[in-house]
Image (cartoon, rainbow, N blue to C red):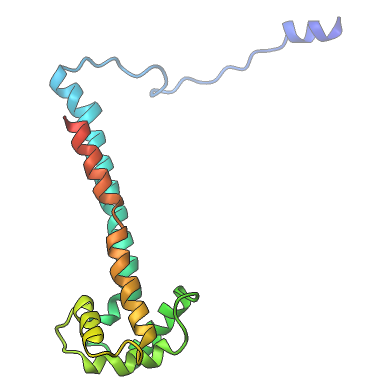
Length: 162
């Protein structure tokens, strides 16, 4: 009986009301504004976030593989970045990659892309001489083809738009 009394006669706590308390004001929007607020802005926000995610992904790939096409960096930077690439792909690349890439890059023209370097390597039968470089080129070229999440997002947005 004592417990019932304390629950019934307990002092109620009051909180001071603030100016921003209460339900939000009821705003009536015309159909055009309703579409802009509920659908268009949502799509644009999603698009911006997907593009930003894609940019970060490409930045990560460029950070790992960017030295393969940059001829302006020094030999010590190539060695450092190649070591970082070997650490990132421990199962695929051996430590010999660092020396192989330092020997291979001077054999290529300064304006060659990675696909042209790989094609040149195959045509000149240098694959057996630089096996780790061949693996690194193939990894780099396959990463770009497998990062299609952004394209899927654009495809979904096309359906939503219709």
